[in-house]
Amino acid sequence: MAQWRMWDDTIEAQRPEARAAVAAGIGAIGALLGRDLDPPADPVERARQSRERYAAGYAPSDEMQARTIAGVPCRVFVPDGPARAVYLHFHGGGMVTGAPEMNDLGNVMLGRAFGLAVVSVDYRLAPEHPWPAGPDDGVAVAGWLGEHARAEFGTDRLILGGESAGGYMAAAVLLRLRDELGIADRVLGANLVFGVFDWGRSPSQRGVRPHEGPDVLDPEGMRWFADCYLPGRTDDERRDPAISPAFADLSDLAPALFSVGTTDHLLDDTLTTAARWSAFGNDTEVFVAPDMPHAFMAFPCSITEAWTATLGAWLTRILDR
Image (cartoon, rainbow, N blue to C red; front, side):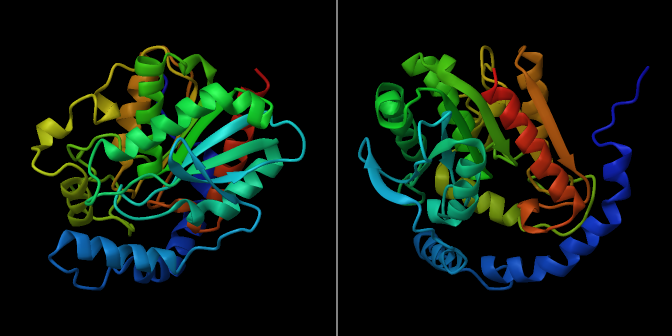
């Protein structure tokens, strides 16, 4: 019987470099996230302070245009000439913090490299706007694109993607495009980067990880995000398939690229959902970054370069279909 290996010998040899990169950079990212601060008890005030810290790390691009689509604020990048597809992007931040500006640089580079129009959604956040406000905003924008993308951008083909809570948003919106709007066939692929797919707190969210390396997430923070986004619900209730994609019917979905690090507290969310995505008969690719935390692309090293190459090859493959 063949051994199931999550990474090859080349990645294995790069693990010491990756650990050094994480050790060198984890302190600065932790400071940006306020990991050493005592958070206020009031969830709205805690969210406000967290958003202010996040905003200090944004690098907005003047190439991204601020627009309102279907009543939802968005950041839009338009390539020279007709787009090959529209990349519908969702930012991270636990459904509580973050903003589309935090991904401006990456979205501009992605659009240029692959001839994509990019629409990054400024969806509503908890605790002020709990579930289903955020996904509702994502579906509204996706539905508008379904009707207007060809006239607006020269194509009606969509790619959905996001990081962390944005990966969750991409999966949740894709499921609703299938079930509510009937336009899942427009979606070429889903780029699901260390998403929150189990809001009932998977084992890794609770701290049971294969590698006890540093991470930018922790169990207390994950519980706080869930309490803000899904107040008054038990963990079992938070596993309602309408809320948690890991528990949904995953049939007839687009090809997906799942990416996660082994010290990420969302490791199990990715591994479980990717396995089910594949078992339901969907084209599935998984990139696992050993010894790397949540937001692993913030730690430049050979493994993050390998992930960038994997993402590029995957995008090229689905765009050429």
